[in-house]
Length: 438
Length: 143
Image (cartoon, rainbow over all chains, first blue to last red):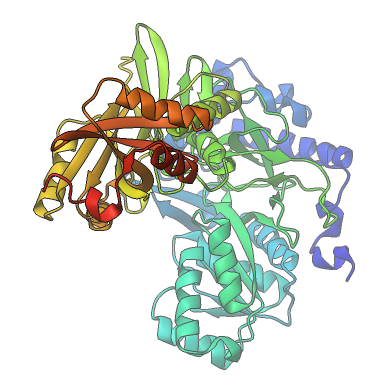
């Protein structure tokens, strides 16, 4: 099969970088003008910065623009950032933020079409066509998961089975009876469903070939497990309601990062402290600017998600940049002796030591004599325990050396007894900052 | 002639040592010999006990990091230079001792030593006239 057969919009998905930059620049100019003219929040912010819409001429100028945060959305709840008259709004979507107020996003018909287009590209990327039957058990409602998958399936002409979540026995019956070829749901539910299908002895009765999973973080191990049980290929779809629902990005069949539909959503990966752009492959905060949105256009929205970006052309033929699986949140980042340190960096190092060392660890940041210290507690598991203290000290020193090399600051490794690092709901509290900087 | 030593990793935390000893006592595991080495971060408890397998299991069930290690136990007569003599025998065979600790044992004293070349060490010590503990003796010494 030609790789272009797996593109819904080959022109934009494989456009040269230069051509794309011109297109993105044109769209950015329009978006900035729309924000300045119609959203008091952006108007005031730009005025304060001495910035006028005319100062933004191409995509490189994006760096002059102000940022938008989740807090800005909350402060302008519910319609403060809306850039069109209410009569133009055809749909409200959102999330129930865990910290209280809802995040509400108004969509015009064009916004819904762009959402369907980008999510439709994702389904096509997974090899799905109008011949497919897509079983959707994402929730339908304010949450964008269910409707996003629904719009995407409509866009490519596939058959949608809008199940929503719950009642596993009925889900399995419908999948079998209707001959679902694709399953769209959260990865944790997919795994639960897969195990239930296997338990019921129904794996061979299924016609499933593809799983489209997102809306929560998941590991490669989960992906392998779902694929093994159901004999399907799983894809990682990404979206956030502030930008649009699922369909902002997804991995292709080469599973080498998530392709961002960057003609709609312009990504930047920035240093969370200095806001300087990171090089390809370097970890930073993902920041999005919407390039087509009418209802609630957002300039440089800080997702707080940590990722790295790869602009090279993918083996699938797409030129759209790819982001890595998320490596955590900027909230977890610590600045230690002026160096940005992410818990995931520590985790990566511990894992790279070769499965011999426990990946349960805890970072303790403290300040001693006006100097920051980082202590990493590592559990002594069966693989590394020895009755010879020389060996334990050797382990401690080698982990210290590797961490120092990777993080750029010296680290004190402390060996602790197994299972003494606090775990809550299977997840350990990774960082304790004892510095009193107030 | 190898005997099993129970080795336990101990974080430097208040009460941790007594917890370990408490678990062994509750399970009627008797301690024949004990040595505690420490660093600024953690300690290493090494013991010869009446039932090393049971001791190891009960500690692990309580979440402690414990393991069994092969070591050698020798009787060292209360005579000046006898330990020195034992070490000389090992040195002649190029056997390196990782660590050693001693305990009183009736008329004599005894030493527990750990080396990589355990078989060679046993042979050298026996040929040199040292009494090397057998398992069933060692676990019940002083009882």
